Amino acid sequence: MNRTAIVALALVLCAGTNTIVLSHESQPGILELRQVSRDRYEVTWRAPIYYGRPHPARLVLPEGWKDTVEPTVRMLPDSQVFRRVVTVGDRGVEGIDLRFTGLEKTVTDVFVRLNRLDGTMMTVVARPSKPFAKLRGERAWHVTAGEFIGLGFHHILSGVDHLLFVLGLLLIVNGRMILLKTITSFTVAHSITLAAATLGYASAPLPPLNAAIALSILFLGPEIVRSWNGQTSLTIRYPWVVAFLFGLLHGFGFASGLTTTGMPKSEIPLSLLFFNAGVEAGQLVFVFTALALVRSFKILEVQWPRWAEALPGYAVGSLGAYWTIQRTAILIGGF
Amino acid sequence: MAGIASLCCPSSAAAHLVMTGMGPVYDGIGHLLLTPEDLVAALSLALYAGLRGPISGRRTMFLLPFAWLIGGIAGLAVNALPTFPVSAVSFLVTGGLVAADFYMPVSAVMVLGIVFGFAHGFLNGVALNEGAGILGLLGIMIMLFILTAFAAALVVSLNKPWARIAVRVSGSWTFAIGLLMLGWFIREAK
Image (cartoon, chains in turn purple, brown):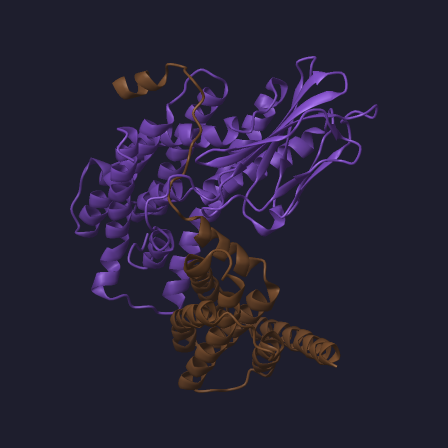
């Protein structure tokens, strides 16, 4: 593909990096309701820190829910934890709406988890566009499907490190067939580890995983420059091999986006399938946006200066290096 | 292999945390996509630039986001909303130009892009003062660049006369919406 014209996409990805941020703004909120007796529930609302301040969203419990003990608030480095024990009355919790006022002004999703005494569990997601969660028992498969497709889609498009890796691959490949092979390899690989991690067959601890993902981006930087200079290497000849190997790592990253929702076991196969579909859809949107942008530049007869042509490779490499150093420092406890 | 093998030892669940600091940039991208007053008007201007040819389209693609950013920085600094109906006027001007396929030299299209971008950027800067701030503006700028490139290139690539007419029809709709917005503004002002 015309790597010179794709400079703008690299700018998209490099523009927003700033200083070290230890917990990012799209960290989800978590509301957990644990049934402790027939009509009594423990309600734990973990509101993430938002732009360095307490989260603006407030949990509104239904009328009729009464505190049985004094509510507590605990301040943690990355969140505020509100804990209450309430009685819910004879109506129970089925069909109840839990509202989050102020959530609509943020970019935070809230995972709501209900653990019942009989061991059953349900999850539902409240979003800025739908700042409430309706508690219900069984639900139609298409509702679950829609929810998890959205979650997967959101996960990849908000994961700039995954996108930067895909961009790096796009910059290396030449020709449609190789592009197809490379993207397919990445998809197959991350699907394998996503499934393995979600089903509990494998897992990767967070700090080394994040550092390794950053390293995969750093790895592509010199390869892009090499490819741009007309040189060759194993990666340039067989980009789909690299896409596959590093795709295995990225799959663990995607898995965390799914496992943190605390879905019930009965929903795992369906959730996995549709979450992966969402990830693929997001990935395709990104790839097609990049290709469409390249096409647009051609139509508009954009002539990039020499320095701009080199920028994408350096942007991918620099950001990869920055994140590798940052995440390695976190890994060894320096930050 | 050793690395892969080491990953295959199930242990505690690990949540993936994207520590990139890109949140405010995404806020900005979302802000533009969810604000029709900005989105429709910007697309309308990009369509007009495309109607005027690849040079106008290309220059607008670079100038509009840049002017938007400068206006946004000014809005962040001043933090006061103008009483002038910026969006309504933008809809009327860009919609009218597209509908009429009005000829303007490239330099005039550039001036239009700068003025338009600065005015809308200013409003965005005021809106983002409490939240995403400068990084949010950067997100808007990036999204604007992409959308302008798409819209302008789309129009430049149109060869069939009816396709250009369809673009002009969209301009007439934008103009009509602008009229309604202006009417609403005047009604509210009374």
